[in-house]
Image 1 (cartoon, helix red, strand yellow):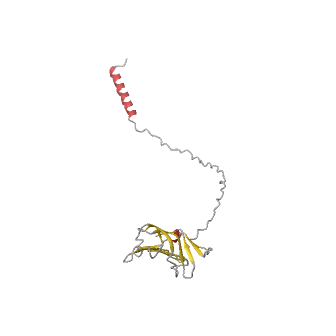
Image 2 (cartoon, helix red, strand yellow; image 1 turned 90 degrees about the horizontal axis):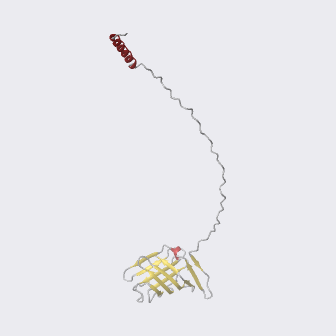
Image 3 (cartoon, rainbow, N blue to C red; image 1 turned 30 degrees about the vertical axis):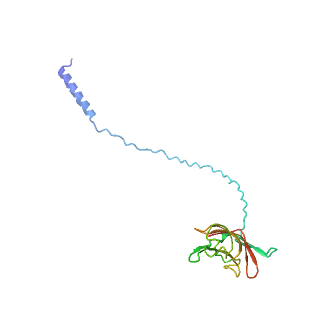
Length: 201
């Protein structure tokens, strides 16, 4: 039978052995080597299917010659030459109001191949003082004068003033006037007619 003294000794001895084993820091951990899985090449070549572009049909293009700005006709049975003008192609026009004792609006072309000029006097002709509307191109009575030179900067000798009518749509901020069947006789006896020509200053 073990005595209490011996039993106590054994318990103390066991405790010391157990403590020694628990405080042992000499445990070594083996280094872990990271192993990388071999790279797998995903170079799967995408299959390219050659698809032909859809056939395109070129649209037919029609080249239209630009309308001539000025067309001078041939004398008709009465010897009158019609002068057709595309007023938009004649711009920019000279357009100004001349003040003073004899004030008037002036608008005319500036091209080398045609001259059409308007002089609209507001005092010189008592019958017109600057109103809008349709009036005779009577230079003496109305002070509304139309000049023409079909060959260049003018007017040509005897190229006005012409007789007919003119419609004045605007004066302030730019002249807008349409010449309606105005005939102009030159010194050589040739008669020209302007019709439906709108001048926009």
